[in-house]
Length: 341
Ligand code: GH3
Ligand code: MG
Ligand code: MG
Ligand code: MG
Image (cartoon, rainbow, N blue to C red; front, side):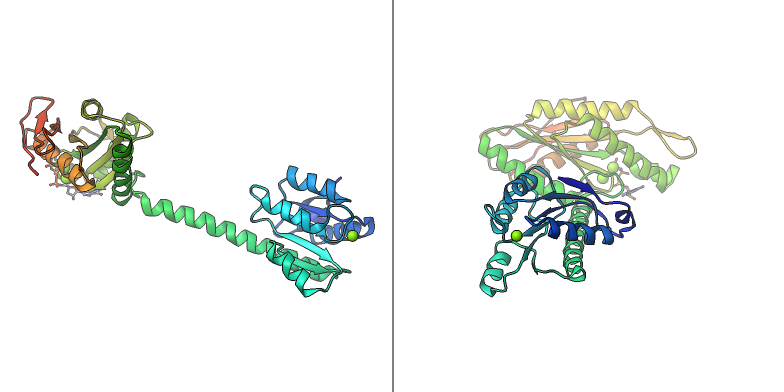
């Protein structure tokens, strides 16, 4: 049994989708419907005249509020309340119980069971509305709070210029991926890339053009990497990517693809100018016993080797022999650089 509430509903300030009204008294339901329609709180009123069809409504229709009679033959309001509490996604939906009882213990039990409020029968329209509105307002505020928290969490883990993850996020993700790789014995690699002579880009084309190059680099990184890789801006013109399930060889292929892609492309900046630039990259594979900073250090050493060897190239930290030493190996014409620990 469903009834559209119109046209009074259209005037509601904060209308939400629907409310379920369950009462074995036709007169009571009619009165509630009238009060709700007058206030225009809901788009739709779904009604049930007994506990069983009320239960079906509760389980089948996601509601924004439930107003339910406590005393009904068969399934009473308390049983429906408990069923509603268990419905997935209903945790935040206010459930009101209408009751003639004044027994404080009973009322307390209903509130403890999760009722948003109890409303004494025979109810006064203004009181019913005030209680319902209060809980709808609280629900709306909670939803806003959740949204703001999500936005804040995103903000606090995102680099505002490039939209990539920031250093803090990647650092934490790396620590988790190291634990995972250690636990499951899967390879894990880390890539560090740095724009070559970036200071010159800023000097020659201006800071906004430099920013555009950073955004362009970030977009290329996102395109080249797998969706399971975790890429971030490490600082200034330095980028980092955590590569789960990737050994050194795979990481070199990826880094080389990134390097070649950027070397071949040009970044178009405001005014139509095109800026060609290159990056150097260092990659390292996690060795037994590596923590996040050891792995970052290894990739950074390889990056430094790529810079010393002339830039626009990829270098990798050599796999450790016996877990003691890890040098770097060239992948394009370049130099060897050692890393001892
Ligand atoms: P190398 O090839 O050795 O990496 O030289 P480089 O010029 O790229 O490196 P250097 O560390 O000397 O300079 C990095 C420059 O990056 C200096 C700094 O002003 C610039 N920079 C850092 N963050 C930003 C940013 O957000 N936007 C812009 N446009 N420039 C930035
Ligand atoms: Mg009744
Ligand atoms: Mg640089
Ligand atoms: Mg740098």
